[in-house]
Length: 157
Image 1 (spheres, helix red, strand yellow):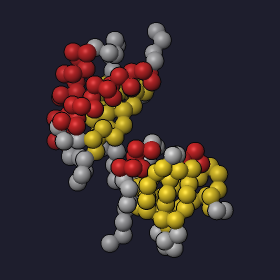
Image 2 (cartoon, helix red, strand yellow):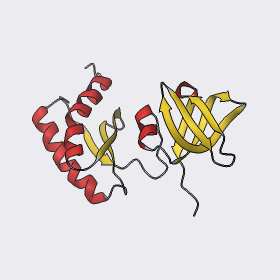
Image 3 (spheres, one colour):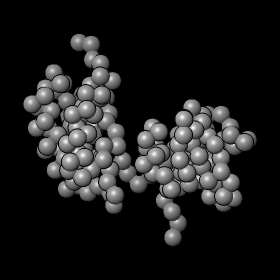
Image 4 (cartoon, helix red, strand yellow):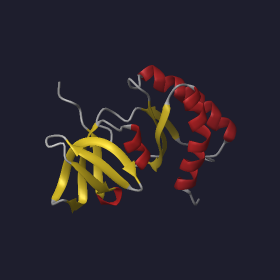
């Protein structure tokens, strides 16, 4: 059986986004992967964070919706979770959502001679991430195509 994972993810996003938005959550990401069987992972976020109760509530409603729509014609496991405190940022909209937050970025290609930058997200425009370095307040312009990995960092109190 040929499985178009990307098409399933896009269809799930179309169906689930309005539902979770109405419930007060933001759809952070959707993954559909083989992991000892197929797993459909719905990753949520909201201001103040996600609780286990939030995940359970969304899981029940998403499960019912997907049963009716029947877009995955075989057995799979549904997981609903939070992206975690040090969540990985992989899409322009992730960076936009967390504007003003501290992030650690590892680069495929150096920017101003650096392969790692820790700074505050100051925006994303036309595929370029603006980072204000934590220590120097210097603004760096980092092409998203240069980013190998980016994670939110916890602020020190």
